[in-house]
Length: 331
Image (cartoon, rainbow, N blue to C red; front, side, top):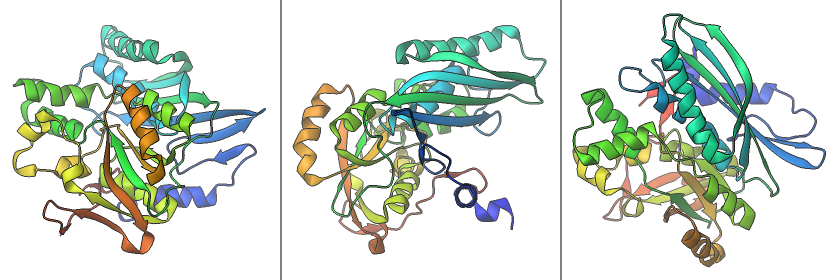
């Protein structure tokens, strides 16, 4: 069997099944972060790999923005489990013909977000490489029970923070126009792609209140990441197309693509979570204290009903749930 036949998530599942769970490991492979218990303390650890030509293109991404985003995508994983970040371990493979000043700009981008998030860079490794690659590992902690992907129930509401599709549309504009931002709307969308906002405050508030039953960050696309929750929780889902939160810039720039990027685009790094209906009023109170809007976009249903998107006419919409898969690509 070839990797492109198995797919990224199929490979992860095979590795998970073949890997014994170690001492103190509450959750290992298969969630946004590993959940470890050590001496009555709860730690969350996440890691991401970014490779030039796969995850980023230096023709239209500055080293500063790349550094910022490197940390942001890891912080988003911790946000999805309600944890607070503490330490960063960063390893780089760097072509020898890179300018020292560019590498310094990369670290400035890291520090800009780290200083706002309470994260300390404590170590890592460097190596010569034929192309730039980055491996970041962030260690966090929480005094509350982490939120996982696997506790949603049929009948739960589905909510998402912020707006959807901005980053994917911003990346599309970058591929088409290069580093030129164009209109104000285009500049906003490109900024959302380059400088995502990990929802640490929202994730921690939801975990502290104990009202989010299952949660994930939207990194591979709304429908793809919803699929992860549904599989882990053994539920299905209904999404209402008209309820999807879209920015004014997205509505203006999306054109014929409509909701495609919002449903499957990825790299929004918003939080998708399930909630008991009886906790709606509690969420409203929490939402008023957050700096990001929260929108109800659907509900969980029995697993046998699968995942359905209902269009504005009330009809099921035929659409692939696939977002990004590293071995199959986008389809």
